[in-house]
Length: 246
Image (cartoon, rainbow, N blue to C red; front, side, top):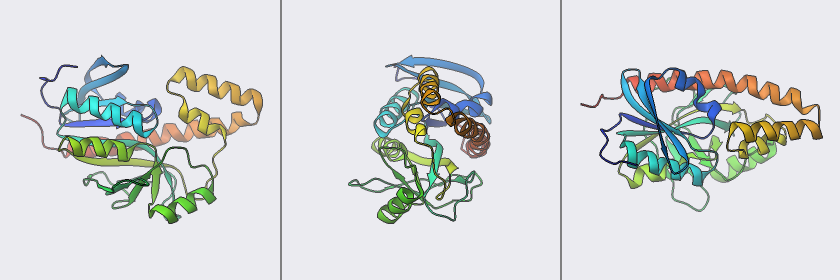
């Protein structure tokens, strides 16, 4: 990765392709760079220079991707973007949240910068964990233990890399499942798949074992497409408010 590139106004780390899909549709003059097995994208969105990467799920992948993005594209502002699970009943499925604090068990809490995106969950806390939290009971226990309102697998790692580089890190998340929603067991295998082909293979194997899962997975996919649009809208509004480089 070349380090003398002009600075980007924003650098965004997504976990999954579905999270980044509708945002990528808004990009103009897009270019792609390959480095260490990751595809880093650079384009103009809302009149700003933006770089982004799809890291894959998990805090270690997110940390590595954020580090590469920061080193190669030198963004002025870092954003952790994607889907999150709701932990408290007051946050509805489909809500856009912009947490101001990232926590992780056994680690120092990290402050997150304000994002301008219109959000129902401004000022919430997000907890980063190592596996998908599926049941309402698991969500309630995690909320009690962490004091968090939403959960994901990446944000704390991204915020840690941004802090190490002296950069502000914001967070824009769409709540893909509310506190009382129960996720099918198969969603764990899909979340762990690191490519579209592996996700497709995991889905087919799940359907073979339990044919009724097809309806559950289709419903999740339809919701994810809608959530991806909401995420893209919120990111575009946030990016438009950032100072332009120059």
